[in-house]
Length: 111
Image (cartoon, rainbow, N blue to C red; front, side, top):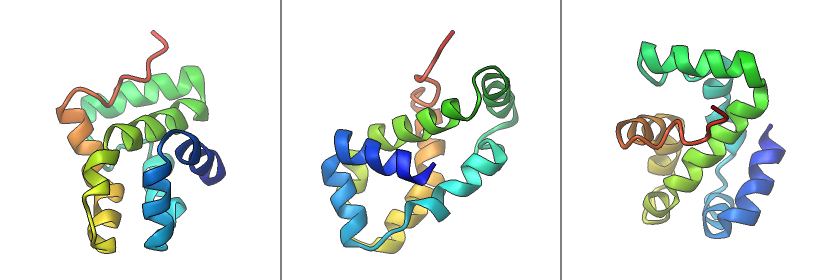
Protein backbone atom coordinates (compact mmCIF):
# COMPACT_ATOMS: atom_id res chain seq x y z
CA UNK A 1 0.00 0.00 0.00
CA UNK A 2 2.72 2.49 0.95
CA UNK A 3 4.67 1.80 -2.24
CA UNK A 4 1.59 2.44 -4.38
CA UNK A 5 0.94 5.76 -2.67
CA UNK A 6 4.59 6.80 -2.93
CA UNK A 7 4.60 6.01 -6.67
CA UNK A 8 1.39 7.99 -7.06
CA UNK A 9 2.87 11.00 -5.26
CA UNK A 10 6.13 10.82 -7.19
CA UNK A 11 4.19 10.91 -10.45
CA UNK A 12 1.30 13.26 -9.57
CA UNK A 13 2.61 15.41 -6.72
CA UNK A 14 6.42 15.46 -6.92
CA UNK A 15 6.74 18.58 -4.75
CA UNK A 16 4.73 16.93 -1.99
CA UNK A 17 6.79 13.76 -2.35
CA UNK A 18 9.99 15.82 -1.95
CA UNK A 19 8.58 17.63 1.09
CA UNK A 20 7.76 14.35 2.80
CA UNK A 21 11.17 12.92 1.94
CA UNK A 22 13.00 16.08 3.05
CA UNK A 23 11.23 15.99 6.43
CA UNK A 24 11.79 12.22 6.72
CA UNK A 25 8.07 11.64 7.10
CA UNK A 26 7.06 8.03 6.66
CA UNK A 27 3.72 7.73 4.93
CA UNK A 28 2.87 4.21 6.05
CA UNK A 29 2.33 4.86 9.77
CA UNK A 30 0.24 7.92 9.01
CA UNK A 31 -2.11 6.25 6.54
CA UNK A 32 -2.31 2.88 8.29
CA UNK A 33 -5.09 3.91 10.72
CA UNK A 34 -7.24 5.16 7.85
CA UNK A 35 -6.67 1.95 5.94
CA UNK A 36 -7.15 -0.42 8.86
CA UNK A 37 -10.30 1.25 10.18
CA UNK A 38 -11.65 2.24 6.74
CA UNK A 39 -11.59 5.86 7.95
CA UNK A 40 -14.16 5.13 10.69
CA UNK A 41 -11.96 6.74 13.33
CA UNK A 42 -11.55 9.88 11.20
CA UNK A 43 -14.96 10.70 9.72
CA UNK A 44 -18.62 10.67 10.73
CA UNK A 45 -20.71 7.49 10.89
CA UNK A 46 -22.74 8.14 7.71
CA UNK A 47 -19.60 8.73 5.68
CA UNK A 48 -17.94 5.68 7.25
CA UNK A 49 -20.89 3.56 6.17
CA UNK A 50 -20.52 4.86 2.63
CA UNK A 51 -16.81 3.97 2.69
CA UNK A 52 -17.58 0.48 3.98
CA UNK A 53 -20.13 -0.08 1.21
CA UNK A 54 -17.63 0.97 -1.45
CA UNK A 55 -14.87 -1.08 0.15
CA UNK A 56 -17.07 -4.18 0.08
CA UNK A 57 -17.84 -3.61 -3.61
CA UNK A 58 -14.41 -2.49 -4.85
CA UNK A 59 -11.85 -3.75 -2.36
CA UNK A 60 -8.70 -2.15 -1.07
CA UNK A 61 -8.07 -0.25 -4.29
CA UNK A 62 -10.95 2.06 -3.32
CA UNK A 63 -9.23 2.93 -0.04
CA UNK A 64 -5.87 3.50 -1.74
CA UNK A 65 -7.49 5.65 -4.44
CA UNK A 66 -9.27 7.70 -1.78
CA UNK A 67 -6.07 8.28 0.21
CA UNK A 68 -4.23 9.31 -2.97
CA UNK A 69 -6.99 11.69 -4.02
CA UNK A 70 -7.23 13.28 -0.58
CA UNK A 71 -3.47 13.81 -0.52
CA UNK A 72 -3.54 15.29 -4.01
CA UNK A 73 -6.40 17.65 -3.14
CA UNK A 74 -4.57 18.83 -0.02
CA UNK A 75 -1.05 19.09 -1.38
CA UNK A 76 -1.04 22.90 -1.70
CA UNK A 77 -1.87 23.28 1.97
CA UNK A 78 0.81 20.77 2.97
CA UNK A 79 3.43 22.46 0.77
CA UNK A 80 3.00 25.62 2.86
CA UNK A 81 3.86 23.72 6.06
CA UNK A 82 7.40 23.83 7.36
CA UNK A 83 7.00 21.97 10.64
CA UNK A 84 7.25 18.20 10.24
CA UNK A 85 4.92 17.62 13.18
CA UNK A 86 2.24 19.83 11.62
CA UNK A 87 2.56 17.83 8.39
CA UNK A 88 2.25 14.55 10.26
CA UNK A 89 -0.82 15.77 12.16
CA UNK A 90 -2.36 16.99 8.93
CA UNK A 91 -1.69 13.68 7.15
CA UNK A 92 -2.97 11.68 10.10
CA UNK A 93 -6.38 13.28 10.47
CA UNK A 94 -6.97 16.84 9.31
CA UNK A 95 -6.73 16.22 5.56
CA UNK A 96 -9.56 13.67 5.74
CA UNK A 97 -11.92 15.84 7.77
CA UNK A 98 -11.22 18.92 5.63
CA UNK A 99 -11.77 16.96 2.41
CA UNK A 100 -15.07 15.68 3.76
CA UNK A 101 -16.16 19.20 4.75
CA UNK A 102 -15.25 20.53 1.27
CA UNK A 103 -17.12 17.70 -0.45
CA UNK A 104 -13.95 16.27 -1.99
CA UNK A 105 -13.66 13.04 -0.01
CA UNK A 106 -15.88 10.93 -2.23
CA UNK A 107 -14.67 12.20 -5.59
CA UNK A 108 -13.08 8.81 -6.26
CA UNK A 109 -16.31 7.28 -7.33
CA UNK A 110 -17.27 4.25 -9.31
CA UNK A 111 -21.02 4.85 -9.02
